[in-house]
Image 1 (cartoon, rainbow, N blue to C red):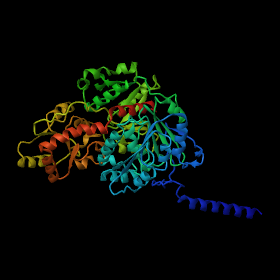
Image 2: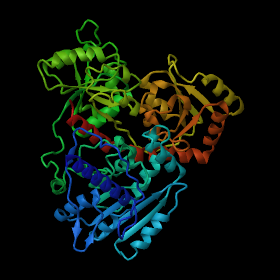
Image 3: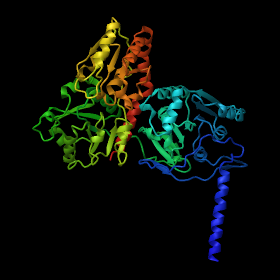
Image 4: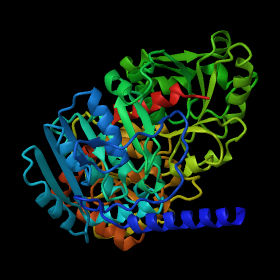
Length: 582
């Protein structure tokens, strides 16, 4: 008898599984089959994220909507909070659900080169009776198709060519010129993480589908401090990002209404690294209401117990780089001051100052246990940092972050404040300045050969190699029409970003900058000109020096930076990082 029961159970389970397999390919009754194929991967685990459990199916009278995570969660939300409008990036079976409930729905269908608009036409025919629907078809460039395939392969296409990112930023900026209550991201394309980043501070409630699957680039999202992230894990996963002032939405989604933007003023010790970087960091701290502590002269004394002899600039040189307004949020601290009144956060900014800062951190922790330690990967030394103490990391780029991916490290990929408000002036001088250091191990060795050959056949143009001292940078970019950055010590590209923000384009030696963070804003033909051979160098210089092209590219540099780097959003991302320090 026991054997018969076992055989019967096995047969029953087999037939049930077979029936499910046959049903899997059947279209939903009365709906178009979605074109998005869900991957069968395990949901990723995240820290500092609220994960909410499963929800029951949605039924309304005789009409049963598709039992999908987005419909289930939005149905509960709409019962408790009144919404008027929604921007849907993508189209799907859930579109009808929104059309039946909201006064205005805009559906943005993005197709890239080589894709057809058949699905768009089908939905347009299906929902043509809805007067509250505004469908938009956007045919993107070939760079969207390329970025889509790279994202699907778990790569970051922005590290190779950020042209697609500029295109997406412009598209979302123009589409959200009208105010929307909700944005829902579920396109057939894979760069959904980039789309969510574009929507921060444009829409109060952002939702995205498929967040259990890494092929959509979710690892590129760092939630700003003015948003709360709420994740639902069932199905493909759906995640909401809600502005923290919308407590009604947070409560309806089961989030934590006790969370609010941090208002504690922090005192943050940041050893001298790069003048341009420190100025940009100071502006971010000031926006958040924090104080930047810069080391005084006692830290330069090798006889002192906590000396930082590797500092690259004197305190006076650093302070001269700050405006009077900025100086009000900057403190000069000596060793005795820091021992008497320890800061809230200590930064390690290079491999050279890791040891002395660690010594200071361990000493101060005895009197102030709450003090935190943050590693900053401004250059190429991240993989050389001590994994024992690196629990909080501000990463140069994805490559730096991956150095510590096997550990439980609180990290962000972040960019400080960039000035894009000053007017762009195109100088009359036909002069190109270069930023080269003679001791660089990977610098552009062909500099003298390329520039001399160009000057022999092109009169009226000059190249000036600036002294390798950071204090000359501001004057370096003010009296030239472009800058030649051709050595690897530019690190994550703060100097280059500042150059572009002033309307000064850059010429870059391609082999040095591939897969670097600065590729996020150095876009071929728009803000930067890449070269590898002399022929390519000559051709792009000739194109640039045509007066019409030169005027256009200068303004485009600043405009592109404004779209690609949102200073306030980046500052809030930093604040969220500070709120979760380990």
